[in-house]
Amino acid sequence: EDKVVQSPLSLVVHEGDTVTLNCSYEVTNFRSLLWYKQEKKAPTFLFMLTSSGIEKKSGRLSSILDKKELFSILNITATQTGDSAVYLCAVRTSGSRLTFGEGTQLTVNP
Amino acid sequence: DGGITQSPKYLFRKEGQNVTLSCEQNLNHDAMYWYRQDPGQGLRLIYYSQIVNDFQKGDIAEGYSVSREKKESFPLTVTSAQKNPTAFYLCASSLDRASTDTQYFGPGTRLTVL
Image (cartoon, rainbow over all chains, first blue to last red; front, side, top):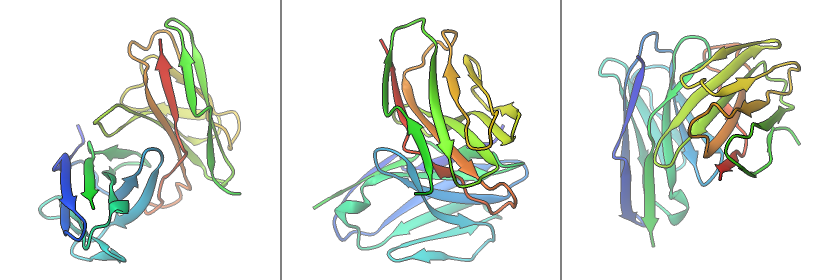
């Protein structure tokens, strides 16, 4: 059975802090790993990672994949209150199916 | 406006009633998906469809049914057989042409069974 595990499950930080969210996976037929941000309703796409060791970056967010150790991290630097959300990690395997982790609830306090 | 729409946003039903959740997309995406999200949990796949008139069960299909008569539409029926239907339901779609295709989500329907 495919499995995606995120840690920590929740995190509370102050504005300006840097956070690292973790995602590990055990799946058959790995194709890609995706990060989404969910604020109250629809998850919005952040990154897709397919190759090991190549960092994807968008502003203060960055992510990297390690296919040998089967994990990915999502970094957020200089956090802002608007970064408060649930961050979801998902792995694409056979066909178009995604298997999601439980999510990390990030709260950024002013 | 291009995107995925779900209706209604909030839905209340009495126990024992079937209810149908709507999902429409005008992105010309081939594949559509239904997920369920419970508090403190990630998304779990209910059903998905990669082509019109065909669909497959996901991980938690029991108590649900779907149809895919048109490319743009993928309605989900929550039947009375679903033991714990109160949840947040998300619909998604993707092009499904390459392994790098991304799933995009609708705004969700929050179903409460009284």
